[in-house]
Image (cartoon, rainbow, N blue to C red; front, top):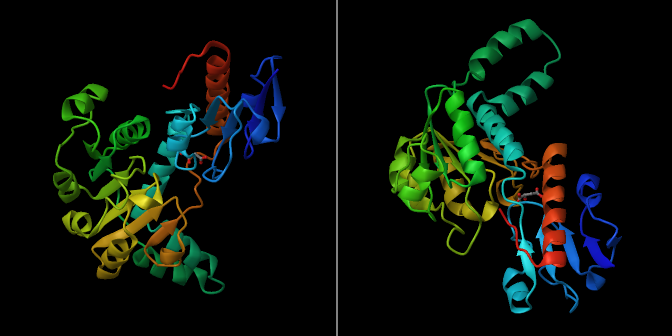
Length: 300
Ligand code: MLT
């Protein structure tokens, strides 16, 4: 019997895929396979029995991938399985900023008297912009970036893409409907909204620094539904204070910028839909069974 340990709450839709050759256990130190969502595994000791870890999500920052490689433990992620959920939240995030929705909600909820007069005032105080006809710069053209780009196009936006890891030719091949540039500065200068969809690696940590902020169009909005590490917090705070950045919309709560007027912060909800949780768990379970029983590495 193969033992599978689950860390975090993993969707039953995935766990029910394991055949009768498997048993689900609570102790990761006794497992042949582990499914994890966001729990930090960096200090965890692994047993000699452990063959593979499947991350039910895209990023693998919570897994010690180098240590796993040294110990011959295969690490899977579930690319694309939650991409639609993240795409929908990015579009929502863009609208939250464009229409000043969080501050409008806060203000409207505080009204107690003379409401119709106050509403007239609110109309001009919270007037926003439409996203149709504006330009969205998509940094990172993986599964999520391409879906966001396509959705933005259907909403009437102009889109420009850039990817620090893939060549312009491969980017064109991935989606010939998204104009791409090799020059991040060009994308930043042209975009009213910029959305980040690259993994957090040594190369991308702090990639959004004061130089990048200075290349952005005045009054642009930055959306980060990827990882907080991509953005240098000092440079971000300066851009917000200077007013050159209209809003920072992030899915990663950070104490240093919490409470700032022009920060819209969500509690890492990008992949938190039933559909995405089911998809990720099902893909992770299939990856583990395929590897444990047949030695096949399926990760796409
Ligand atoms: C991801 O990397 O895809 C997300 O962090 C998934 C999650 O929220 O668990």
